[in-house]
View 1 (cartoon, rainbow, N blue to C red):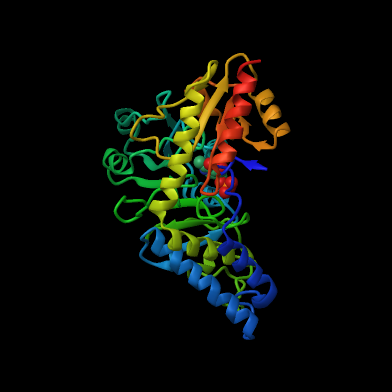
View 2: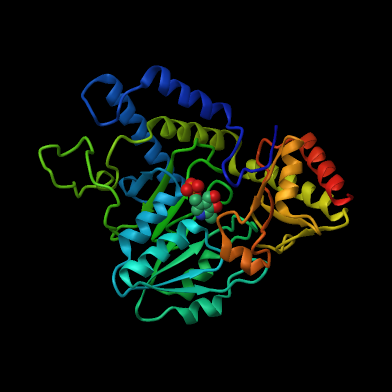
Length: 378
Ligand SMILES: Cc1ncc(COP(=O)(O)O)c(C=O)c1O
């Protein structure tokens, strides 16, 4: 199998991830914070380590403000549903994923939250002047997709921070974390939402949200935390306030393995390998007739290993089908980002997304290009 869908979830996972999950399943085993016995204490220690490591990875200040969730979507739901109330105004962008747009649609309809969507260019760049103009006195928050999951374009958070002055900045870093360095303090991020199963090399079932001190959303879930069991009231202490129920401890173990892998190889080296793979694919596609590549792939903000393309006259679904038959995994359609595809001009049929990863081999790329050439020459 030739896997080019790392923007959905990274695959294969590094050895470190696999052994860490296996070790948890075969020897640690316990439910963290749910007992005084060794398996529970060991599991709690593992969760504590992962929380500390991940907080340091984003240069957060207090690890208790790093909350584990099920995925990037749950983190964004906690931020949006937990922070926005009746009469609030929120500004967002045309590059957003449905994990932002759908909760926003919900709060717009049920809580009369006013939503302004700032346009982006065909290349995925945000109009900073329009962003500044959209922010008003009643704006409660600005939600930004840090890196586009269809174009690979990264937004300049420092300039965005300046444009929105002191407003609450909520960042969807699902595509950027692990691909480019993120520093919540330097970049003035108030709320950072992300997945742990993409470029952090964790497994599916885990996401996280980092809340700057003073940002305290209403929890999405209430229930047992293993702490304060004498009270039927939800604890106020973090992270327990937001982590009700048994956590995805095997996935948290996997994340620790992923972070170990990143430490061993280095973010720079990992990024360079992905960049080389992306360039090699782009170079091959450029030589083919009838191939259209979208976005500003040669621009300074195209920093993610994501390519969006189409074959002229061929439906993306047909390209996907032909790739599948050849054992190649690409993702076709709208990628849960209908507004972004409208901005690019690929709505409603979408496009073909190719997202190589650290483990993408040269032979896989050759085969992918061969298959694309065959489709384009039909
Ligand atoms: C930009 C962006 N935001 C949010 C998400 C949702 O993340 P998850 O699949 O972890 O819920 C994704 C997933 O692809 C994404 O690309």
